[in-house]
Image (cartoon, rainbow, N blue to C red; front, side, top):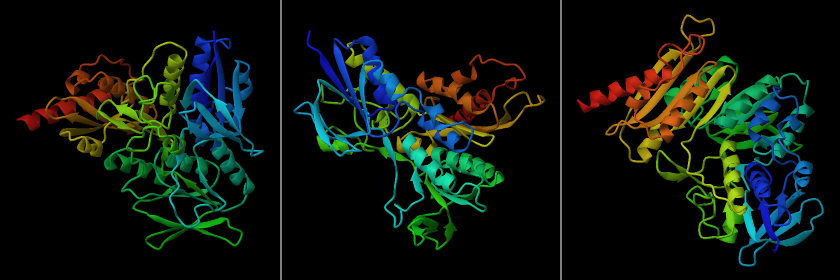
Length: 463
């Protein structure tokens, strides 16, 4: 039997999960696997970077799930610090460049996996390339930021500016406070955490201010000012204000890293992510798969393709791809957009659609917001918790849930994620048989209270 060759472009969650799953199904005598990774690290938790920066995780290596040596021990030819710079789909080969030596070579393939991930959005601003300006998406990015921070360790009055207040921006702001920086967060929206509706983002804003983070809403950054050594010294906004900074972290978000795919003619969606079928096979390409932060996925609630970069998805994509490459069968049906985060003791969660998402999808809906506690109100650890729920007017179908509150709040969003995936109505959610004991929830869990209020809102609009 001829040995097939699988080439994997990208050595993190999706790429190496695909390689590992394919290896489980086919041994080296049937399938040769060659993987290329442009960075210094592989199979790591990018989501853990803020906690390493902030000191909650002891060291960088704690974030690494599997080293290059461990992958190679499983007969995966993993080539680090090697960037694929061209895909020749017609010829069935890729051109790779050794980033240390500059040497280039072609490698043929029978099957190809494109898992190039995402990159931090870097707006085209004067000074954006200055020393001390960091995007944080990969472990290499995290190491560069850590090196920058450690150069000024122990200096009094250190100041950091975070541009953007999404998940990464908010988490990095907390990490920098933990490292002793005076932190200012600049963002263009009315409230931080644009992944929430503004009324819920306002709760996050209050919590950030409470922990000493200066949060400036409606701030449009226009340039990064530098000193005579080319290092960042301040951030300027359209209003004419300047915010002094020893370090700047970009938390504006990420975009799919798909220039390689685009140049090769692979199909891209509206957000620039690669388009695949349910088996993660690239549309129109029999022997090419793609997964992770470089693809678009089906939003099961809105019914459209979206770019939702999360490590949970990437690992699942890799399992699906590896099964297909290895001769098995698996699919990735889509997502409901579940994500959780925290700022100090405040937990933040969302799943499904925000109000603007529902409007963009052409849906008519009602909202319900309730305030409750994480446990029975009389229990010593009770913390405040706010739940917002969206439901479709005509059908009562649950459309989305947002939760902001103290310890024990965020993971309740999983109840809503399951309900969304199952297409449940809010009436059905009210009837869910959830566990109860005073240390865990009130008699009526806050998610059920929100659902009950949503049912009332639906009935009032129908009347």
